[in-house]
Structure formats: structure tokens, C-alpha cells
Length: 204
Image (cartoon, rainbow, N blue to C red; front, side, top):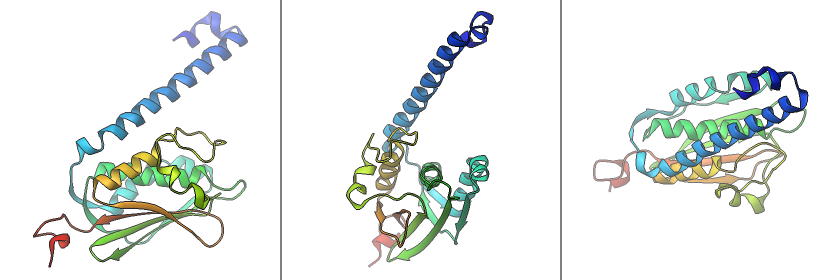
């Protein structure tokens, strides 16, 4: 509202100050939402039969303009159904895809490959990119709250921490593997069925 005032719009310095304050407030509001989402993970876990492929299709609708602007490509193999909270898995995939685009190498169009393989009674999901990569020394640290490795790109250091918390709330695990050449392979594993005598994890 202040930025729309004629006195502000007519003065370049005032307009710049108001614009800076607005951007800062917007970033702070976004960070607060991310922190709240991080805190709500354990309290709001609603498992249903979730088609991970359908979740990914919805995820790709959100950053579509960014993907187009960066000439990014996303390829995905068949993804499994899982007993999981679909909304929270949406957050997981959105964070990982967005990071893969954000941390692309300068002058190189982002390429993202998403695959899945069964591992005993779990599914191993891999999100691989060909970006700037993450050093071995930093691969555990990036999942900590407010920890950032690359500070030249805008970010809050909350996204991967929330992703880790979501995966662990589902009884899964997450990590980063080495790749041939540049890039990052962020993987997570989730149970293929609910634990218990009727689920795969409870099978003899």
C-alpha cells in the first residue's frame, strides 16, 4: 500500500526503500511458512494409498514456468504407489526438483532424472541432477535446519531439513550418493507397505 502512494512512486529513493522492505517481508513470510511446515510434519501425517507418479505430475505443474525458462528437462521412470501422506510427499518432490533447477551449473540447462527400484520391503527413489553437486563433507550437513552449502543462490536452509523430517516420519531414510561426473543424487527410501502383521514389513 505504501508503495502505491504517489509521493513514494514519484521519488526514486523512497520507491527503492519500500521495494526492499517489501521483498524482505515477503522472504520472512515465506520462511515462517516453511518453519511451520517443518514443525507440523509429525503432527499431520495422514497415510493413504498414494500414487507417487501422480504426485510428481502435480509437482511439475508448480515450477513449470521456471522449468521452461531454464530449458530444464525432467524424466521419470515408473513410480510406485505408497502408503504415505500425499501432500507431504508433494513437498518432498517439489523441494528436490526445485533444488535441482536452482543449483544447476551456469550456462548448462538443468537435467533431472527420477527413478525408483524396490529394495526388499521398501522403495528406493532417486532424484538425480547434473548441477554443481555437493561435496562428500557436506552431504550430511545439508539436511540440518538452516544449513546451506551454496550461499550464492537464494534459500533459507529449511527445505532439505523438512524433506528429511517428512521421510523419517514415514519410517524411511534419506541421503546423497556419489555420481559419475557433476551433479547430485538425492535418494530416499520408504516402506512399501504399512508395518504390522498385514503389511509387507510384518511378513515372516
